Image 1: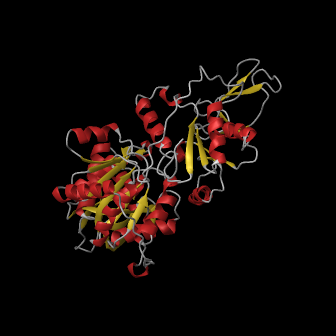
Image 2: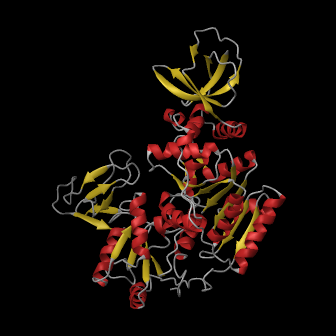
Image 3: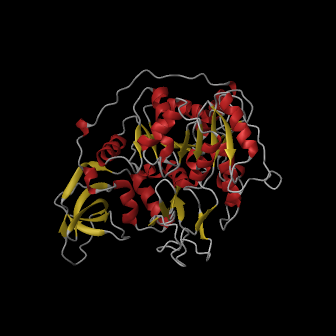
Length: 517
């Protein structure tokens, strides 16, 4: 019999193959010869006409792997909406040819422990009840909005518990892998079961194992980045999109998609339930609430009972900084008071490296990337100039390459490394650590950094936006933001929205367990 097969290559057409097996179903995963290689694919159509050229035979039939009709419909929708080749979309689901090699009997069972329950506040309990009532009426998406520190995570944990009791699978989507270690710990403690982490840094072996756990349909909790949306869940009950406003959910390379929006589409196609959680919802989500496409539940108070952080705006036109200094005296005084109280401080600047601008004092030369013409950023720790757009690296050289003037390169403006250097001058005996994607760039490093904060081994954290969302540090009582209005400038039409989201989120790291500053 002849079959049309979609292969995991960037083609929008199907390819015809033959097989002696006449029982192959649509969605059946197969391995087929393609040029000089073999490729994974799925049966797209059965019993097709002979196209009039030599037909190759299916190499292998993966009898245990058949994608559901809902998954095929989802693949079709993505290809149509994003104008991406069908085969490229299929690759998001099948990952690679090795995915077919597995033994269901050898899949690890979970080592469950005793779950740990948290008593919800009255407001949280009311929110849980509202969400449950909304889900009982329809599978309309629900926005769980709440001020930072209001306990949104515990509310959706209660929802997850409800679905786990029904033996359903759960997907918790997070915008960045930096958020997974702390959330993983909380999920394990709350539900007493192992968690599957899905992101670009996991090993090939774990990737295969998690893929097949999802396909088998056993109850499982997956915490993943945007690509986790394409796992082959066969018994999915609930999708939680945490920090739904975050721009990291948008895929900019190859197939361009917004994972939050695709999650809503998948829930609709498969008739699952979806919960969007954020302290600063995106404008699209707010509009969908207004036009009644989404339901909304709101938490107005911090779970700890403490008031929301007090906000002070420091006008640098009136509070002049000394030359080559970037932190105002008001912030320095607040840090001192905070340290006296044995509390931690976060100084936030969304700018990696030491200095974003390097100029020659003599001729005005500025270091530029040879590959993409972006300006190079000086990184003191690595002793290099680094392009943040394409990753090009140049050796640090303080002599001007244009006019050959010796030691004429000067650094203008601060990055997190320069701010940390300044803080060490004011607080020489304190432990000051930088958290950015340059030095905290693997799950193990992230986990260690979080552990150090929780153990109070770090007094002052200097961080980029990697620290701005999702974290809960009870002893962190002060957040100082350097160049708070810098994000308002530039060509991004959503600059105001993004700046508001960022400042609101990073400000919410303060005072979650103690008095706010």
